[in-house]
Length: 310
Ligand SMILES: Nc1ncnc2c1ncn2[C@@H]1O[C@H](COP(=O)(O)OP(=O)(O)OP(=O)(O)O)[C@@H](O)[C@H]1O
Image (cartoon, rainbow, N blue to C red; front, side, top):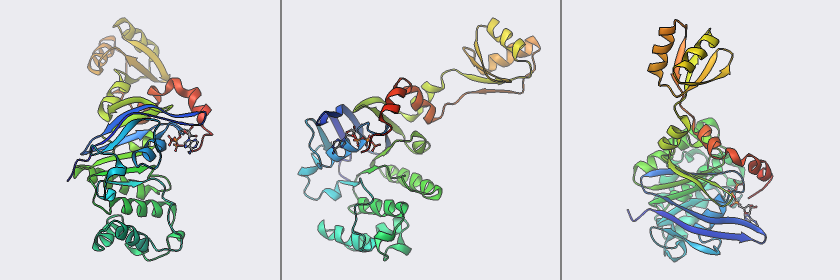
């Protein structure tokens, strides 16, 4: 497999008065799923369009395996991409759409049936694509991205329109592609979609990177040293824990949020003080919480961009 790395360095792009990209820099490495997350208007689609050579950056570079996409002679063999699942001829069948694409790239026709099978479209592949649901169109777009068996895959919001079964399927599918050594870059405006799938997350806002981190590190940082304590005696518990040096806040009626003491120490302190408790659990942040922590001061920004379209 040729070099799969997708590398974006200091991309800048303005559309008239709008700054879409303001120094976007990150790498999607082989062998992992990289989530590309940010609110509407953060610059995800613009970055992907520039990677594909569909738009030109004002400055910076975007490389696939060390080369600009436009310089690749048979690009589908290097990077498979899905930007807009609706970009297809409605009267053409899904299979026909793929045959046409395969021919344009000099690819063997047996590959078309292989990718149809892989994305679970076999029973619908001979029907007109115009009648496909959004989820089916996403599957067809993913099949098209896989046609050239490329070492790098880039999908813009592939979970849109997928039903729960489709989401579970796509998560496993993308993980499997990464396990084969491919670089998989997936954009989403919902962090929760990436939970349990992405190894690495690039969080963006206002055209630049806010965080670039492994999912494990991101969750560890957001989890902090918080421990949840459920007790029928919150006042005595708070007093005992505070005396032992913890910062205690009441999360809900009988649940305390405790910082600054490990779970084992909390058990010891409450037991010694004779305070009853029914649950002591170290808090593990979700990816969504980690995201909100990071973009917390951008709430106003999120509200301001909620109406923006891509
Ligand atoms: N062709 C265009 N002409 C003018 N402005 C554009 C164009 N494409 C994008 N923009 C603007 O650039 C900014 C970045 O948009 P972009 O679509 O890249 O964000 P995004 O992160 O993909 O958002 P979404 O999650 O809504 O798709 C937005 O302010 C958007 O309105």
